[in-house]
Length: 351
Image (cartoon, rainbow, N blue to C red; front, side, top):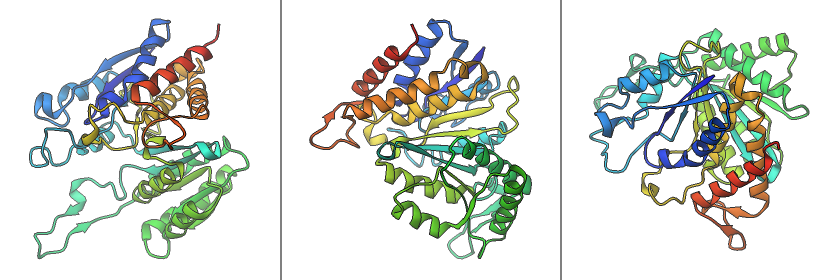
């Protein structure tokens, strides 16, 4: 039995999960081995961005499905200046050290997977930062441990094996950063050990290639902040930041010891769109597909493949949310889009 903790997130975070949660409820009702628990909306409910009940829900779950996190309507920056810090705390509490972002590029009928460290490196804890008073220097220490770099590259090699014939790039800036020289040396070692070939690409060159090359790489492995930026470039090629699902993963994958991974759409909380029901829920569906593929007893059901197939069918039909629609295409809101996905999923279920 897989226990899924559901964290609603901020802004559109809660509503963007409506379709995926409806599908999970249907799976549970049909006997799928899963249980849903719910966290708290955090600041508005308790005055804390990471209440103890949220941490406890994660301790007793196997995975988390989260809505987008960030600014929330009615909560000012003065009241809650850094809501994303809750994610950083959860990552460190449960050793969710590797980020995997999957961007679906419909016009190429393929995915691009960006694998990066999400703890350490640019995503350091506050002890490695010094704020400026306007006169003194601000300092951000960039520290990477060889073992953490190796984890990212080994996971990226695994994704590459699943995309035969497509390119795998390791991105760094070895001409400037000591951390990048460590990255490049480790990438060579992992490539030799796994037999999975890769190309070393400087980050500025990688940005150029992602914009200008007709074919996109299957896998990009890189340091956290580089990957954050490059994933948005790939989203631009795809057409919308809503076409990206995100996971933060504990590479040790020890089920039964608290959450092993957290899955969420990669886009922001879009507080100005909260309640409009216009947002594109694809990122939440992609996150759910990755979750179902991650959990051993749920993977056997084949539902991740069905979700991806349903997304493909609906996209080919010409149905679009506002962010992707052209004048000749059928424009639907979030609820209409979810209804199409759920109908396709029903049609794809085995008899």
